[in-house]
Length: 88
Image 1 (cartoon, rainbow, N blue to C red):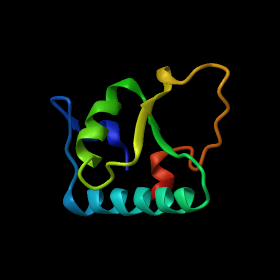
Image 2 (image 1 turned 45 degrees about the vertical axis):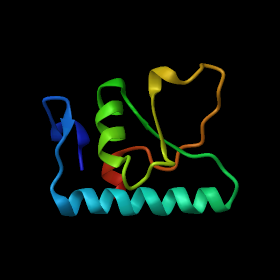
Image 3 (image 1 turned 90 degrees about the vertical axis):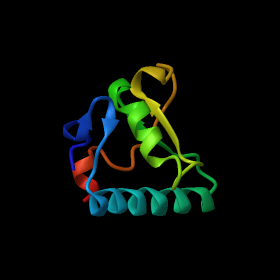
Image 4 (image 1 turned 30 degrees about the horizontal axis):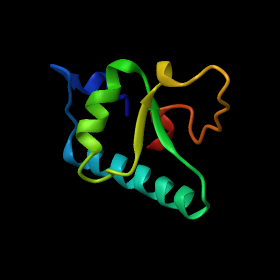
């Protein structure tokens, strides 16, 4: 699923099944990380950050959504997935 193609007038517009699949996948990963005591966030670019927050807030209000540009250069990250396509 390519989220950038789902942007319309700065809103993320997904088919209901695609949105549900995304939410379930993110919720499961967040839950596992939370139980393991790890902090987790959805990393995106500046254009997608606000639309993702808006779309996911009701279901995943505890999941942080940050843009690449917001990450300090000296902060180490451990990726879970490298692209949205791998989530499907």
